[in-house]
Amino acid sequence: QVQLVESGGGLVQAGGSLRLSCAASGRTFSTSVMGWFRQAPGKEREFVAGVTRSGSGTLYGDSVKGRFTISRDNAKYTVYLQMNTLKPEDTAVYYCAADEYGIRVRDRMSAYEYWGQGTQVTVSS
Image 1 (cartoon, rainbow, N blue to C red):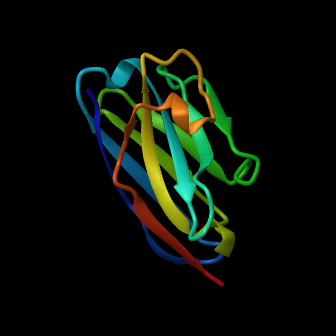
Image 2: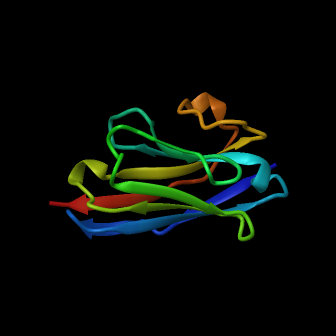
């Protein structure tokens, strides 16, 4: 089983940057595909980014390509989301998720068995 705790959210002006972290517990972190999703008020949860077990493969949602970067440190059981050039439309609760024993990054919520509690990101205009 994997337990996930996100941190790093906050309030930032448009054009600014934030780095989210997701600390995982459990021995299967290194064998899990990791993903970030987000949910804005009144909207469905959407895929933001994902990274393979080794960190060599990534996938991004269209709205964040070129601005966000996902990475992981298996020695620290942590996955990161570097968010640059933030826009007001990036305002949402950001969730970390784990696809235990996943082979490739998938952008469907149903692919991920474990979820964190979320961290709020607010971008002011």
